[in-house]
Length: 216
Ligand SMILES: CC(C)(COP(=O)(O)OP(=O)(O)OC[C@H]1O[C@@H](n2cnc3c(N)ncnc32)[C@H](O)[C@@H]1OP(=O)(O)O)[C@@H](O)C(=O)NCCC(=O)NCCS
Figure 1 (tube, rainbow, N blue to C red):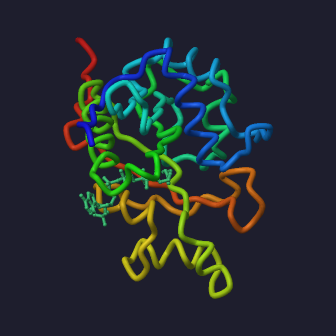
Figure 2 (figure 1 turned 135 degrees about the vertical axis):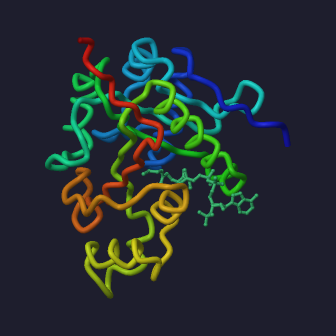
């Protein structure tokens, strides 16, 4: 096993990131999915905001990625669906002066999980928020473990129980343990069939944020 390096992505990582997204959706070689971002769109976005896209590399192999976006939307407004939030694969809602960082996508290859790589990638993103003096970071956290409880409770009740620490979710609990707080339940976050199309708004407030005073 080799050391894992977390770095800013380069446009040539577009293909590898695209292939990891395909793995996440469990797609066969001839299958496509409307929410799988094309490799060219990823590469184009990396050229636009390279400091906001991270890869975990083992030697030169991409074993995880995190894509973020500056946005002028805030976690206090009506929650948007994922595709609406980014403005399609052209990232039309990327706002170069946006005051919040939005978590577009985040995935670690299953063979590399539980080694602290995800935690290191959160640290890299929190550091970016601090360096850019943004108000914070928010995302739609997927209720990855809900399917196990779907006969017993609604996704909303599941999300509440995870927030209170009564149930452990493989994604949300990890995020809450990394310093995020729950900002509420998001209905219809993805185009998956109900009840698997929901998410939890997760918010991290930058403790070092400094409001810029107007020059007088
Ligand atoms: C969520 C995800 C990114 C986490 O990545 P990861 O690299 O496994 O994260 P970490 O290893 O940093 O932490 C995962 C858990 O393993 C634990 N862990 C970390 N290192 C460990 C080790 N060496 N041995 C055992 N456990 C370890 C952590 O403590 C953490 O658990 P905790 O929150 O209860 O403390 C990954 O599971 C994933 O890609 N999931 C699918 C996609 C997804 O859900 N993305 C987020 C969309 S919102």
